[in-house]
Amino acid sequence: MAKKVKMGPSRLSKYFSRLLVLSVITLVLLILLKSNAGFRDFVYKKVFQNNMSFAKINEVYNKYLGSSLPLKDNKNNTAMVSAEKLEYSKAEKYKDGVKLTVDKNYLVPVMDSGLIIFAGEKEGYGNTIVVQRPDNIEVWYCNLNQTSVSLYDYVKKGQIIGEVKETTMYIVFIKEGKALDYKKYL
Image 1 (spheres, helix red, strand yellow):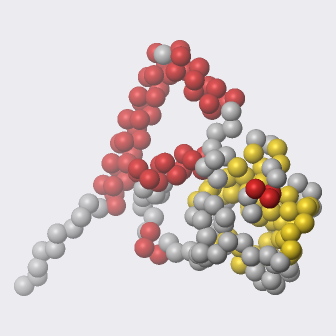
Image 2 (cartoon, one colour):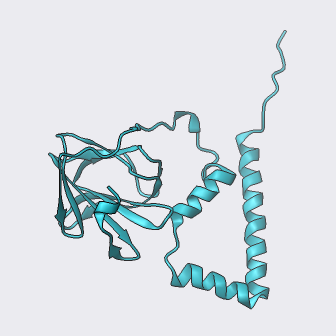
Image 3 (spheres, rainbow, N blue to C red):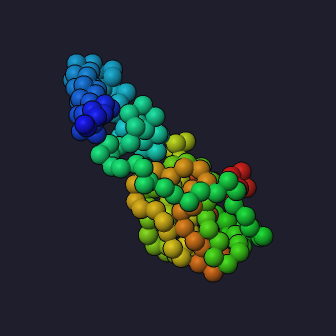
């Protein structure tokens, strides 16, 4: 005789409940934008005049609503992580950032969680991954041989994002288009 097994909410019902919550939030925001000039000005300044941190939005969304793709199977969503900080033997100024001497085939851990906003070649830096942190600081991890992440992935502190080409790695810290002093962040 077959047993009946109680099943939790299906993925489809989770998807529709998240969709319903997002629809209600969207409608409330649209009503407020249409009827309240002060709120409309506030949103306009935040979205169009200031740099908006999509990493922060993604962090809040994941905290309260879970994954942005609820139908994705999260059981097999694994990533290599490292509890270590960046390990290097030498650091020297290079263009807008720092040139680090690392071990051959060094696996690069993310220094702080954030959203990948660029993945590709940058002139003078080679293959680059740019991570936007929730505090709106962009961290460029440059001269990577191989990468294990894609554009718009959310990476967590310590997650391995790639492997350094040879023994030279470049890191740049940028906020609102201005390069920051790397010594504060390494």
